[in-house]
Amino acid sequence: METVTQGTRNWLQRAVELDSTDSFAAAVRAEFEIPPGVAYLDGNSLGLCCRSARSAVLSALAEWGRFGVDGWLSAATPWFDLAESVAEQVAPWVGAYPDEVAVGASTTVQLHQLLATLIPARPERSVVVLDDLSFPSDSYAVAAQLSMRGFDPKRCIRRVPARDSGLVEEADLIAALDDTVLAVLVPGVVYTTGQRMDLARIAAAAHGVGALMGADCSHSVGVLPHRLHDWGVDFAVWCHYKYLNGGPGAPGGLFLHRRHHGLRPGLAGWWGSDKSRQFDMAPEMTPAAGAGALQIGTPSILSLAAVAGALELLNSVGVDRIRARSLCLTRFMSEHAREALAGLNFTQVTPEQDERRGGHLAFSHPGAARVCRVLKREGVVPDFRPPNLIRLAPAPLYTSYEECARAIELLADIVRSGRHLAEPGERERVA
Image (cartoon, rainbow, N blue to C red; front, side, top):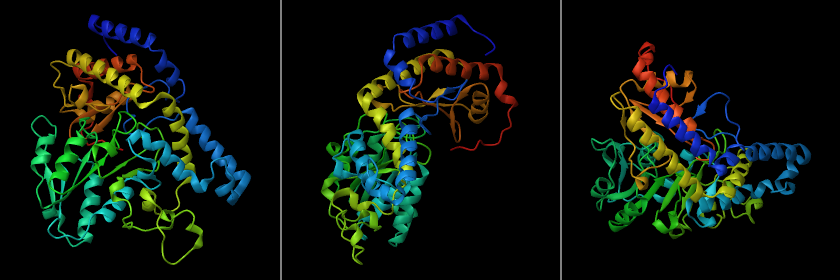
């Protein structure tokens, strides 16, 4: 960094003081493998590796070596039961009963399964409401499932645009609901802006017109509390590799409210069988009870082991402490940014109200892609999202206040000095 102003020193001094009194954070941070020499603020794309996850994977490898095929029944947690074991551990993180949760396939496959199971062929109910900021894969899955039922996605997907603020308002989603709507699918936290959605309010409104309500909680699970069952959400999906730190490509999870149990899985596979009958190899499937029936194929044991290991650490901390620290970190960054980025053409898109904010902050800037490249080269790992968003995610389990302060100061210094203007203008590849 080229200059250190008095304001910078004050913010950095405040950050150091906050870190020095945060013994909980220091102890938990020590459990993570943090890339050397950088402030890692991209945990909302991929959480870092923790010791318990690494240990669990190594143990699974050792059991594979020791038992071979017998590991399905002889491992410490038999591989045959591992998906159910992980689902039981994840259930409290989404506010669900264990029989409402299943893990194993990727997040998008889980969404396809839920849609295939829940979307009936009802011409009078063919509309699915999406917000304009939904993660693209959600839109692709909805369009594919509608097409397979003979519906035209261009006609049957009703998109609710963001307002001039860059946010999607719950009132606009609710206004889009009527008796032609089959389902509404919204994010728990919008992946671009960091806006937290009121899932309970949207679920109540959807049910009021006879529609289903679903949620993609990939950017909210692990960083804030959920009560999917109590909120009345019909179905939900999420990944385990962001705030849950389950590793790259970790299997996704799904939630199916108990009111929908007993439906035949839309995409049937042998791993969704009643476990007591699975090896009967019968030509007709006997589905498991609850959400377990929506499992399809054999899960990746090594990937599940990483998720199980990460959950050991997460469970020792608890979601309430995680949410409290997350809010403190993002509030600190927001207040710092309001001062340090003034006059530099930045706009914080993420809501400032605690109850409307997820775990990351998003700033718009005309040169966002170029700024992100310089940030990364100079020691801060951010995330760029087209066309003009810089996302900074202070992961509450391992990010320090000092890293947050230095990231904001570097962001200001890059733009103030014009270093980003020397970068090529092509769009940055995003993960």
